[in-house]
Every structure is written in structure tokens, then in C-alpha cells.
Length: 378
Image 1: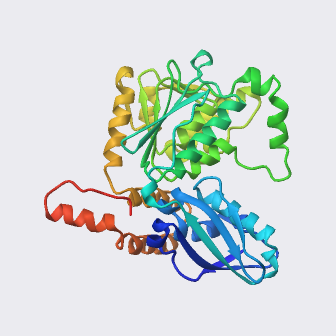
Image 2: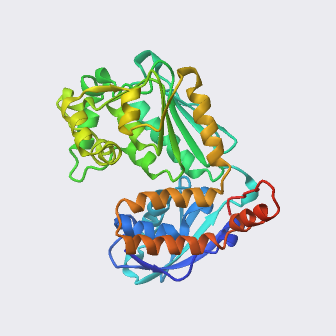
Image 3: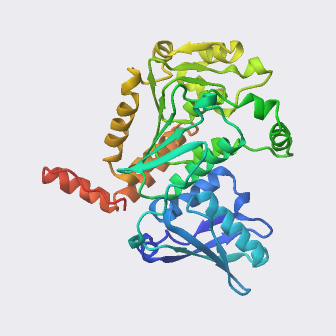
């Protein structure tokens, strides 16, 4: 596994298209074998705007060099690319390898172009990406294609360094009514789901993983029913705004199932263990005002104003320094699973890096000059 990096990646060099890093690799193990904490350690060096332009990983040691193309710019793809590169180059026998990371130069502009999805809409404007689940005829229920397109949309967002905030919503009349029972639980897609869940080492639902790994603030604009997996989607957001028509429910128990990971891990943090238990054990559905009083949502607004309110909030967030936003979200995530000394060390290290950024200098200068800041994300 990776033990250490010789130096912090030269991000200026990456913006010009390349950089090389020395890294220790234990014999017989690949990069994707890293535990999450170790992946986070590597990500501290390789994270943020440069990964948005990630194009190629090359590893080399005592055998000929080999290049590995990387599909997109997220950290997990980088790990996957390194792992494949190490395997193809037979570098597991080396105690040490060099990793060359090639990116597209900044001048090429944004990475992402919005594809034509069938089950959702993806739009980007003013550094805000809006993902709208779009199967209104079934209240935006999720079938296999919808799950796959949600995952793909958030992978694309993560790969685009020009996006600072995400708004997730549904086409009226619902936010998301959960899984498409006819297709996913009683239809031809049932066997595919069962095969994934029956794996020796089953993993987090891929769509949930993609949303969880997105390091941009996510706002859920809950415009109607958010039940079953729709509830899980709302929980994966950092901020939840609800229209007066919103409804929330963990109805898995009524299908003879347990909730997905967000319902067990995130819901109790928001509403407390007792109320979470009540929702999980009964499968009851609560209205928007109850969700507000319990702390599940931050505000309830008129239905017709919901998306506008969410977009306005996203715009205020997107006005801030992009790097600081992404590290802020990472800090909130780490804080829930760290002791004070460990987390304090991470905060100090992060501040040390951010103090060196152009955005920090611009923030100070704009304050002193009494003008709006012009952040560049570097």
C-alpha cells in the first residue's frame, strides 16, 4: 500500500499539464487496497482542482514505463488507474515507484459537457449544477438505469473543477418515491440487485457512493415525497430545503428490508436516536413541518418558490472560494469520526495549505480594498 509521498504535488506544474510524485508501494498490494484513512492521506496531496483535469497516470520503476488512461477526474478513478498501472507494469515487486500524473491544461476550460440522460436532467450555470430526477410518471422512482445515471451524473460533477455547488431535486409531483418496486423488487432487475448484494464483499450502493464522495456542497430541494431510497437521497445532501408538499419516510421495514446506510448513520445525527428509531421501526411518513421541527430540514418554503430558494442559496455558497468550500465539507465529514487532537491536526494542516492559495490572497485583498472577491479556485 502507499506509505508516503516524497513531496506535495506541484499544482502549478499540474495546471501546465503534468507532475511527478514519488511514492512507496508495499510489495503485492495495489492502490485500491488502501483503507479510507490512507486514501484520504493521499487525497490531501492530489485533491481538488487538478483532479478535475486528470487524464493519464504513468507508473515506472525498474521495469519499462507504462501509461494508464484514467476515465475522469475523481480520486477513486485515480486510485483505479494507479492500481491498473501497477498491475500491468508488474511493479508490485518494487519497493518504490514513481507516479507521473498528466492533466489537461487549465486553458482547455471545463471538463464536463452535460450528456443526454433519460431518467434525469443535468444543467450547469454559474458554478451550480442542478440534478433533476425526471421520471414523473412514476414519481421519480429509481430503476437500474436511474441508479446508474445518478451515479454517472455525480461522477461527472466531481470531475468538473468549475462546479462549486450541487442542487438535487425531482420533477413534480415528487422528489423521489424510492425504488421502482415493479422493476427492482418484482421484475427482471431483481436478480441483478440480489447478485450485487450477495457478493462476498458487498459495497455501498454505487449511486450513494458517488454522491457521498462528491466533495461539493449538496442542497436537496425536496419538492414532494422523499420516501424509501428517496429519503436516503435527501440524507446524502448537506442541506435540505423542503416545500410545503414534502413528505419523508423510511419505509423499508414495510418491504421486509432494512434501510440503506444513510438512514442508519446520518438520520440519527440529524433527528436524534429516538426519533430515528421511531421512523425506522414504524415506516411512518412525516410532513414537512414535522421534519422542520425535528431538524431534518433547515427550512420549509412555498412549493412554487422552492427551486428558486435552493438556487439562491447555492449561488451564495458558490460565491465563496472553491477550495475552501471543498475542504470545509471534508472537515465536516472528518469531524464526525475523529477525536479532537486528530481532527485538530487535520484542520491545522488544511489551513497551512489554504494560506498558500491565490484564493486566500484574493480574499484578504478584496476585504482590504472593499470590493467583491474574484476567486479562481487555486
